[in-house]
Image (cartoon, rainbow, N blue to C red):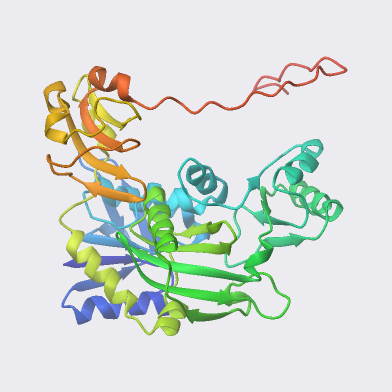
Amino acid sequence: MKLAILSRAPRSYSTQRLRAAAIDRGHTVRILDTMRFAIDLSRAKPNLQYRSKQLSDYDAVLPRIGASITYFGMAVVRQFEQMDVYTPNTANGIGNSRDKLRATQILSRHDIGIPATSMARDRADVPAAIERVGGAPVVIKLLEGTQGIGVILAPDNTVASAVIETLQSTKQNVLIQRFIAESKGRDIRAFVIGDRVVAAMRRVAKGDEFRSNVHRGGEAEAVELDPEFERTAVQAAQIMGLRVAGVDMLESDEGPLVMEVNSSPGLEEIEAATSLDIAGAIIDHIDNQVAFPELDVRQRLTVSTGYGVAELHVREGSDLVGTTIDKSGLSERDIAILTLNRGTSVIPNPKVERVLEADDRLLCFGRLEAMRDMIPERRSRPRRVRPLPDEPIPDEPDDDAS
């Protein structure tokens, strides 16, 4: 395998460990500076230039994209994808995880625990946003912060409002999150590769510091995760679209709460804490997957008029409950089951003799018209009666209004 590692820090611990692991396994590896690429869209096929020369062929690319170069780094990774070069972390996955608000919005639609989160831009809406997450103390986070930078604990509502107003006055976007007191300055970093957690550590804050990042002086120790934490970590990484990720979780009274999904997790602290060869596990995963480049399913299915992918819900009382897949009549209706989700279990390509149960969710490919009646209803939001304003609300100005 010929592997390219995208990194602006070739001498960093993580980059050197990945390079050494690839060489130890007999692969050819080169570290490429992400900012020295030029994207070539002038030819019939997408291409890349590196240091003003034609880029040679690679089997796989492993992106280590820092926060300061997210936009261009994603563009380079996206170009590799268009060239059918395998990457464990796609540009879309990196973008999903890098934006804290976007990541929280995506996770909130799934069965993933997250701290109560709110965001408001208008000064008048901030007090209500603080109350929606349970009131002070609250955690205030900059959307662009990393390694614990830009994370502030506000002890009361007045301080919280003042901090948010100050940050917004400097054109910073901030999130407001419930403070999980029972976590006691601790969090879990689960390292996900593919569909499993290969290592985990607990980070403990130092002294009165509530941020447990090792960069803030926190200490790390290896930990054996409960199945619920493992499931949450793997599911969060997959929802983001990442095959290599560091998932940070809080240990709350409600179970695991995902704080962040990191698309370029560092290796030094977790390898030191666990004494595991995580770099080697990443290289082995890439080697096993290199023949299967990422596909945009939506693009591939547009040529199949009237066909598509949908999630079907086996409702209580349905004729499907208690029947096997081959007796369900789905195949006769031109519907193929790709994956069966039952509780926290995911069963890919289920066998035809498997019996369907109430609340099973089936990811299917087939004729859209045949699947229409089985698609779950949209979740309805409770309506609230809003009092009439004392004064008329002015119309929104046009985008080009002065």
